[in-house]
Length: 203
Image 1: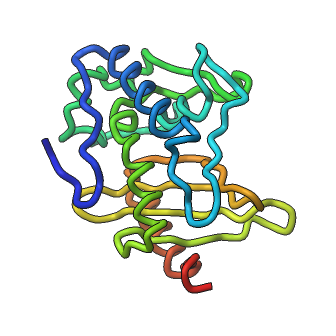
Image 2: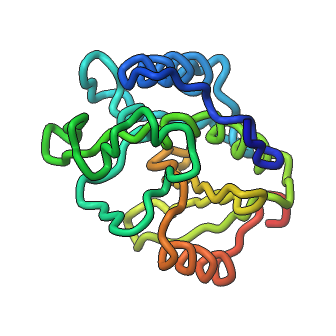
């Protein structure tokens, strides 16, 4: 099994697509959606969106294990060196397993690579809360009325993974969490980190 520095090993997947999604959901419920176990980020609770339910599971779960259907991987799939490629049937291209969120206004393709990385959400929150130098932290203003966006990125040891939060007064609302695939997106995050570096410990 591949190791990724300070991050946990990815979730073990079965040879069955649905069983793998179910295993990811069980982890999500126990470690992320459970308020008693969910780690605190700095001085605030992490909020997971759960008002909208799809197939009896909160939209926050479906968002974390899927990607927008307009993603295009023409040459190399992100999971080319990962076990998930043997299970998913290239779902990001064939779109045979989808979920519709935001009151069915957004269609997303389920992604077992994303599903297997759910433990990294907990890891990166815990590392950032310890002021671990392996996590890059920056904060961007979203305008006069919208809450700032807080970014946590672990980019080393063969892993590039980012968490994005809305920084509310009483909690950090998890907006998205995903492996960073695209060269342009990597460059954008590199630039933003240099421009908007933020530290809870050095305010």
